[in-house]
Image 1 (tube, one colour):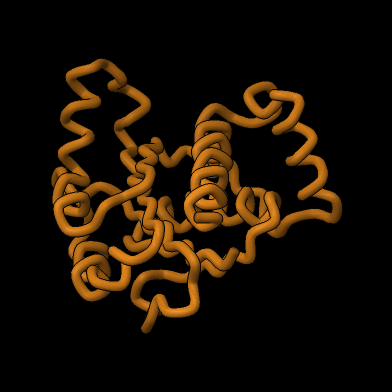
Image 2 (cartoon, rainbow, N blue to C red):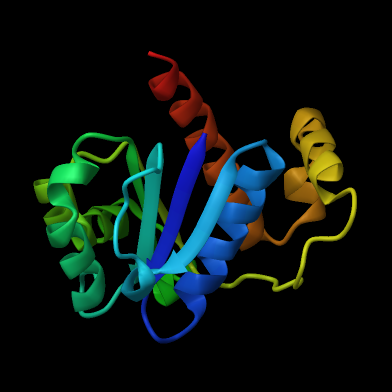
Length: 175
């Protein structure tokens, strides 16, 4: 399974989340390419696409919306998951807040069906390059249900979501 994980935005938060998602997917055996949306000329050759950006003004940044518009037809033919980084997410978690947050990606869902959506605060721990054996350690932690004890809350949420997306993609692409 070949997956494109792409991100937009200038803050670096979405790039950090994209790298974390890619690390998890790679750890689960997927072949992953991570690129900023501005560096993606085609999505041909990828089995699935995961795209994300930081929320800006109650929605996705213009670069991300342009990526979806430009690739709308191709994205409609393959599994497409999205994530949105919302720095204020850590402070609001009520049902009312969740409904507002879902509006941030309504325009994306209006153009292309998404198989999954993740919303993250962007508070990630940047560890740099993966260390030898990281894939095996991650799989073991995932199997034993230890992710929440080992990782920070935000990283745990990103890793859990990424593992769930991987599972969905495996099922969808097996059909």
